[in-house]
Image (cartoon, rainbow, N blue to C red; front, side, top):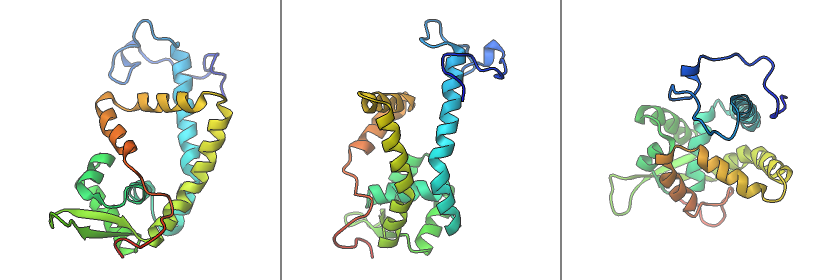
Length: 196
């Protein structure tokens, strides 16, 4: 793994007009050099690869992919979520969600109910089977996150949260904050079975 203080030995040089995601070169006054930013980008790729590796292996056994994982995660954490809100959270097309949701419903991981006040609303609930799978998928990720947060040292949790929040597009941050502020369900629910 490259040292973040040293330029990457094999990093290709890109033309100045293509250095930033929006086509503009890095702003003057950027705290980190381009080489350090590219090294962080590379670390993010490696971190995401390893963060998703264990759940991907579990999902494969069920014939599911990462889209199923995301849907199951948010339905499990926010039981009773409206389909319209899930579309907004995941920022995917209705067609993409419909395919994944149908598979999760048909295989008994999620149930869909009409809203109490508006029968046209479709509300999503995890089944016991869905909660169990969501917990199984999250378990290795929680271990990895706990270890990484501890390795970050004192103040690491705050710094990591600030960093991740800043990585979200500015216009999406209020929506993400409201989702995060909602009272999510525990990974493996207890009590009465909603939606079954």
